[in-house]
Image (cartoon, rainbow, N blue to C red; front, top):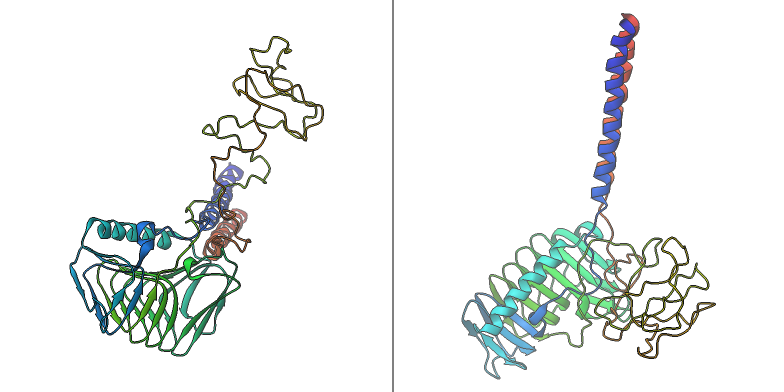
Length: 394
């Protein structure tokens, strides 16, 4: 009986250790999840704007806006109309339906940028940094006066900066983009307000929850967008980036077609697309069409080398498949083994963190989860030790 009483607490303790390990593993799995995108942030109709404000757009001096200028839901636009005031080389949308839609699209883009999983967290001062493509977050981001931030990547590389509060770009500072990358693919999501300093050379699209202030002689290659506040300008040149690549699609990581078990099938919207037999099944040919009187019977479903069923019309063997069967019935057009041209190719490789193309995003740090799991395991083992000692004394 004593042995039975000792075994019960010992069993409970060991069970606790197992549960601790499972909990730790679950937390690590959750911490590793990431939201990724395979291209630039989708700005929707806001992509045409150099300046987009919410409450007001105010300008002093001969500012030049290369792109549209808009405001919604506010109505106040001041300081434009031609030299010596500001000039808009685009269309002015003052509280019209177009500006309202642009603000909606900008808000969606803001949410998308904020939802991406950071590649690196805890940033504050950006001066002297050289950053590869990815997602970078911090509380208040700043670039010191006369400082330089360097972004190095290819023409499809994407950077997203997440500032929980403010973005302060110092006077005469510079953002340098090298390696063929462009301002099209640099995004600044700002939790409150952004200020671009005097004579700063700024790159990228700023989408601020509150206001954006562009001080004297600062130049922007990109866009300045305020979701709730005003945009204030002073003798600036703002050029909306043009000829930008198609936007990406945020998603959770999914297996690449090159991974084991991931076998893409033809899209139902691609009529005439013919599935090729598996390379591991030499001699596999398409099932004969019911309209082909000379065709032989279809292989049994239990046959490992079975060909596609008759429900896949116009199926043709891959040219590289040895022993391919005869071509389809003359009553059906010969389908090309390639995919339908109606399916556009993506401009970058999705969900490939190691690739310089697209948005390089990795999972979050699992250090906290590991520490918690280790702590729970130590507690469980300590309990086992105490129970065993008490059992020996009794």
